[in-house]
Image 1 (cartoon, helix red, strand yellow):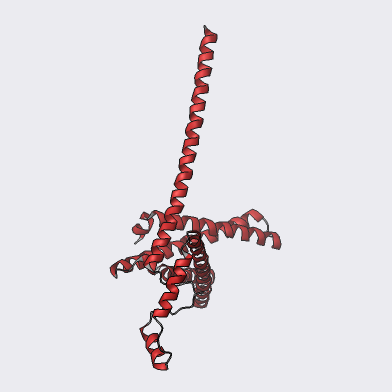
Image 2 (cartoon, helix red, strand yellow; image 1 turned 120 degrees about the horizontal axis):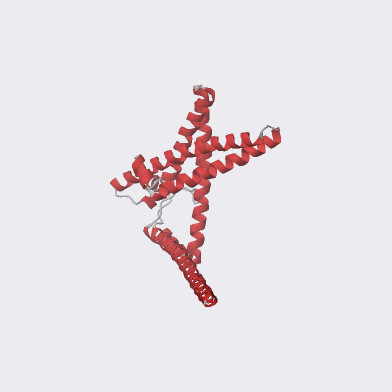
Length: 250
């Protein structure tokens, strides 16, 4: 599993940037605490806090990527697309990783089971809340991209047509039958960050990502062209200086 994680470029990047981000936050928190409590030397307390948060980041994000890799492998065995269960997989992996990390840090700090349990509960709640916030933000960003592509109206029409086709009796038996046969994830409210996406939404997300990549490629091409022009200018100047130097020697 470890080779699969560190062999994945995207997983390595998430671990690296997540660890760097937590280390930077730890440095800021340590610096503020040292200043407010007048702890001397300030640099030592800042570096200590940054190191502690960095260790937490390495353990947390490595464990999270291991769980995500395992969930992805199970999805392939069940012939499920990773995009269909991505939100729930990330929430589960973040919560479990936070619990494991919190329990280890709590036990190391106080050497008691109570500290390990309290650390697991606290870090699991914080990690789950952070993942839900990130998922909600990412979904809003995707919806914004979809609206910019002019697909929001078509999506609303499909939603209205589906609600008309699926209209059934409002009796108690019919409601009970729908509750037993419905997908539990589909029954969650709209504001909940975990949901399944359709094939059309998945294709829309891929198209949005493709547009972003094409834009970045165009920017890189412009940068390369600009550097080539600068290189030509520098070479021409160098030739002129060499020619003037040769004439001066003659």
